[in-house]
Length: 382
Image (cartoon, rainbow, N blue to C red):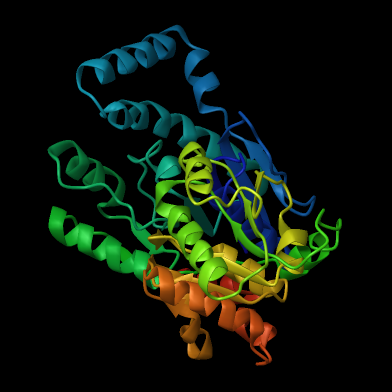
């Protein structure tokens, strides 16, 4: 089989990392796999050599012709007058360029059997494209709709398309948005994100974390949705009332970091909380943690939970919207906690101190790369 995975960029981020993982998963399964990306700025990922790697620079191709450059400027001017409408013009301009480049690639390698686009930022750039081979993977439960422009956006990028959510929660949100906007997709399925477990475990041994004591860990973008203030309040309660002595380590960065730093000071946790910022390889910190926590309001999938389980680390999470419920099944459901500071604090302490043996390999089996590749083939190659 010949498959193309397409993503807008390859900067540091969960969606971008998953795009690379997916392209490698198909290659590892013996398929001819291609990874295509549009924007090269801040590129942080490169797939294995077994993956054919292509940069489709749509902006450069558009600006190579005088009329294309003029139309590009005109589109930006229109967006200045009619706010949030740039996707309309960019799609009309970029879709023909993408179609040309794709046909050129297929002329060299052969026709693709399956084309997987990851994320709204990717498929909004080529939304006029109609092709039954394309599956548009929706990564988030945050799907804007309601205003006239937002509903028109949904019609452009969803109508008549094969859609798939990365979790059952995302699928439910897609179906809700389709219903509210009176838009009909060609299909709506669920395909979870793939996990390269061997690679994660290899990276987990790449270095020893700079800490000499047991610790609790949080990994992810520092945004309001990640609800790290809740984690800090719960951690404070556990220290003050439940005898917790472990430090809290937070890996990640984002636009809410100034609020988190202020919260640490407000709760007088400065000597107990370490803010490490963004790490290219956080897996050694995952492997050596006594517990990984996730306190998000919503997660498209919740990849950090599966990554921590792959490293043999216990996890607890809030009962967030989206994909967490696809991961925390069976006995793991006991480790999903309501948004209650005291309950979460008690579960942290209880989980760290429990004697139960966790069957990590069984928990992560559904998310193995080969399982996800089989899922794509089962759903889209008939």
